[in-house]
Image 1 (cartoon, rainbow, N blue to C red):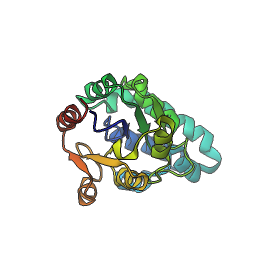
Image 2: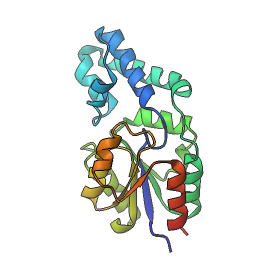
Image 3: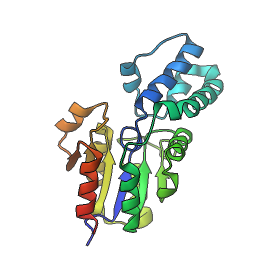
Image 4: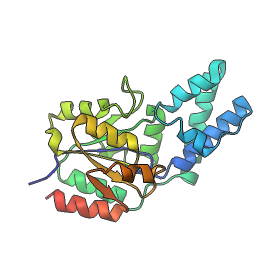
Length: 216
């Protein structure tokens, strides 16, 4: 008997080490269009809305050009600055082998999400992808979790959200599902640990062991 019948993953800091790439890409467009250099902390403070929403607020009339520039830089530098965490692909394939629906719920825009999922070779493993462009309210809204639960007619008590950020914890709790916080690359590790998730994993190996124990 499986303890879970549906599993949802965040992308950044959970599947792949994209944080430095995101910081570099934001700096690329702010330096080019605003003649301004933003810090990592300033960028982190903006996390929540999609990149497009942030750029629209910043760039005004230059928004379309800045958006194209953002995505072009993000895609071109992806292989240099971001990669899937070792063991993640094996974990995803293990879940798929158990015939359990897999979803993405991320605050990223759809374009950058698809770029990353394809670049790290996991796009085809997901049965549903919900990005910041697909919901009315971004995380910590539970909307992306609710859509997954409803589409696959799942028991909320047997759905697991896996993410690295406080917003993932809040979204999972609002949706009434279990939350596993992964802190192998979390930009907010201390805050995450304070929030007492149902499960916490320091390494991908720990997550894999948990999956093996709970998905028979």
